[in-house]
Length: 387
Image (tube, rainbow, N blue to C red; front, side):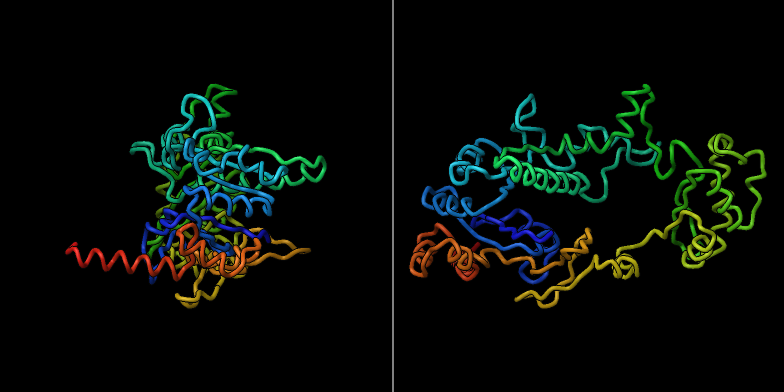
């Protein structure tokens, strides 16, 4: 949204630099998550590097970390430590389960939060095993809460002059997201059920096959939408006593789905979606990834944009999902190489060229060429030792 985001890494680097498919020397997960940032490498295990970090923190509005204790304090990153560098800083930490309580300090990721909050029991087919979400939903939602908290805290600071400590956990994020499932259990005692692609409350709602071996989604949260399905597919199911209202359709859902599938198989996916959209039916194609990146609305919304990478050339990344009309935002920078902006950022903090050289030669900081030199040196040592 226009912030100058500085990613502070160790010499080892963000874990996403070491995971997943490669493009050149970079990894896909890292490239997909880090556009528009600047990158600084510091060895915060050393007191002298923590002094550099302190100078950086003094210029910072918001600090975001996901490091657990006791490592957080050892690196000089807990709230009270950072506050000494900037009294009104907004300090946000992400943990798996919360800063205190019976699970505090445990390691945790998206998958574990889905287990603790019951999401795994709700995802998948009714007769099948629990299934995790196919993308890191908890991580994405947590990042949005972090952003939301930061903006609210900036407003509070504007009004009061005070910064603050903020804690956000994956566990709490996913509980918040389940207001309609866990919340219903709390208010009515009705147990959430695993429904696969169906709805608990109305029918039809599901995935239907097409002649070319593909699928579409159709759903009908109201009688008018079911009538539109009937007109689009040339049937009078809404007059049939088995299907004439929502209660009847839920009672005869298997039979209804068989009838619909027999109709949808008469068309290709493209033909069926065109027919259903023309009839104002709630529908969508089930796109493969190759379809997604060519979808005309996604491209129109600039949710896939190109940036120039100094090593990889043209790189496609996801765009900015919020459209500001007064202060337009865009992806301004390529995902940074490790240590790419170390010298630039240290110069902005007032370090002279010789001081920067000394910080790098002493191993307190590193830029991209130094990290590449170290990698080659390690490779040479492994070759020489016969590894």
